[in-house]
Image: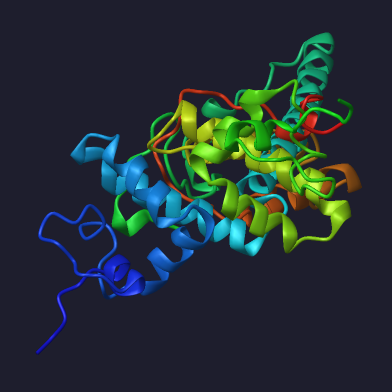
Length: 152
Length: 162
């Protein structure tokens, strides 16, 4: 007789009710997911957080809680905050590199103008410059996501 | 009757604040909301376990990051901090794109100006390309929908790290 308990009820060693709040989001084939969130948040807090959300948002919440729990287990001091901080640093570095590059372009163009030469226009010179661009991951602004785009 | 007042944790939990209370150094009584959100999201017992597993010198930073995450989760119960990570990741991607365009322009200008010479990459441009490469190799942490709540760099917030 196969068990139909979800990962949460298996972990908590209890009967898995038909309306178990955990079962849609913590399937029995991924015990690590519940183990991680339980370790960081506790089953009771997870249950409360999910209950306070509309049903259609619970899956996303469960997944984001799992992500945060994983990061906290990997980095017990900073967790997700370490990633946020690193991203801020990378943004600052990229902005400064970009400002430097743009200043160089402005210098070239000013120099060209002073010498009576036409200013450089990338689009006119290389209409297919898109081939130089790195592959884009998610688009700017709101990114679409789904199971295939998860990164762990 | 002497003695200091209980820490914010023990006040909320309605218990005696022991001299060696693990929460007391980080949750002073004058800031009750700090512990309230942490307790709501993580639970006092889990926070206590987490702190006990860390060396004393790392606990203040751990508390600060837990407070940050708890506040983010209270503000955004669906995505928490993860929404901010996605937003920042998108920003990095956009900047990478803009930087690549700018670098391409510089190379084209150089080639245009000195067509007879092999393209020489100046050390500065090389470092630009290397930095782009580093940015390209930046792991795509995730692809959640971006949060509209722009979260500031937590390490710069004086209230967290002083």
